[in-house]
Length: 304
Ligand SMILES: Nc1ncnc2c1ncn2[C@@H]1O[C@H](COP(=O)(O)OP(=O)(O)O)[C@@H](O)[C@H]1O
Ligand SMILES: [Mg+2]
Image (tube, rainbow, N blue to C red; front, side, top):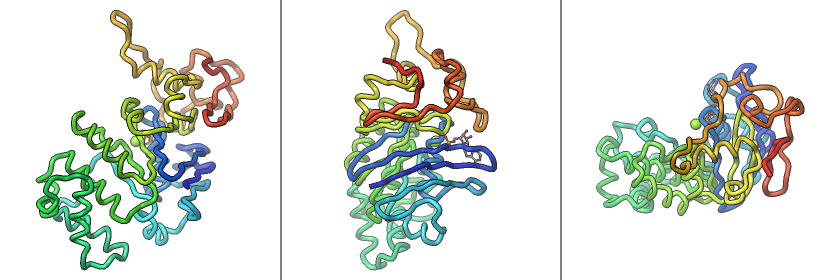
């Protein structure tokens, strides 16, 4: 349904996302994971046509027959929300503090041509669908009168308002308490038509997605069925990421990946992970291809 091929994102001469390719089928829930600075958010913003000024995308991304990259802004405004919708990490910055919640949900529908009449009732209905208690009262509230978890549900209602075919969530629960987080994740998994779920939290992605893409240095370095990738990671970066997320046996040290994520533009040539990898050799100086059916990885010294 979504096909991304050779998607690159650059700011001036720095390539921030490099030749990313993946697909998402109808109803499929795909996780995009990797340390901070890997290029996850830029990938999502490129699909939404929401890259910041001075940052450009190339390559192709198609949702069914429609192009998402290289489309004039006017066409994009029409597509956004109706075909692809996004929920961001911080709901407070995305909501208008001066406008009642119900009116904000109704507005995204009327902006896309829905008749004003009935939009408010639909808004209340949507607030109920994201399981906000007493949706009538919530609709009359201002964002500051709601909790962080409730605001994030409002954002989800807005994202779903025009019945998108694909929902993108970028760290949607990172700012929430763990107890609220679980309910939100269950809700997202239930209501998303198809999902691209971005997180740095491996436990979170495991609870929501059936397939996973591992990103590092702007590249997808491994992808496949989540259970398989988590049980048997092949790329050395994925191996390190998983080891670092596991609680070590008593008395042993917490595993870490040596070094830190380089700043954009300072990743090594060839395999982007090679300066932090214990297995790197001279042949890692050229970019390894992402190969394999189903479970693919771009590593010359994969874990067995
Ligand atoms: N507007 C921009 N101009 C230049 N570099 C940027 C811009 N936005 C993000 N970057 C850089 O691109 C890299 C990837 O960013 P991002 O996609 O936000 O990573 P992630 O979401 O995986 O943490 C980072 O090194 C970041 O500093
Ligand atoms: Mg991000």
